[in-house]
Length: 191
Image 1 (cartoon, rainbow, N blue to C red):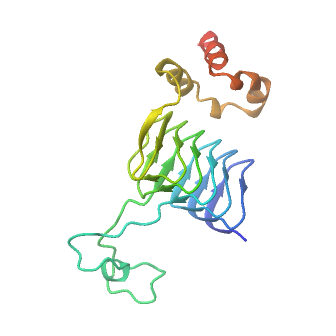
Image 2 (cartoon, one colour):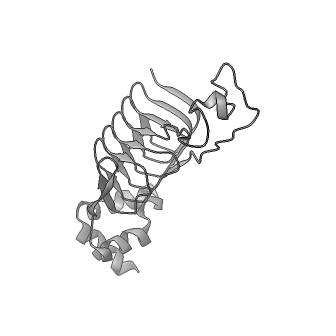
């Protein structure tokens, strides 16, 4: 019941029911829950996408152009009749989602937004601007709520890039992922 158009998957992905993914790449271990629509998105590893999430839902011009209808200012394939030969609005549609990001149910991420590694987007949020790594945002429009961890812990997580480790390393060291202090102590010893 899902529809996938021009999608590149990594390894160990799963997609729920009634999901639409268009012009996107989904890296290793990331999953997308039921009824989500993921468009024009590059998603990192180990991302958790809740149900009913929308990315790059499309922007329409709100000033200068007389009409907000795409057939008037551009030439999309989905319009049965277009009045332009090229796109005069040319929005930056691509959404970039880092690694280890959790996007909760019913969130909407606007075109062109970048979501940093380790970020969390609260349920029912509308994200219209970039989200910094390891922050929690929420609301309409989404605003900073708090950092997930202390600054020094965020630095260690960012430097470790644990999501790029091979599966054997993650499996062997899986216990350190259960406590941020254990993870930081382990990674401080290796550095």
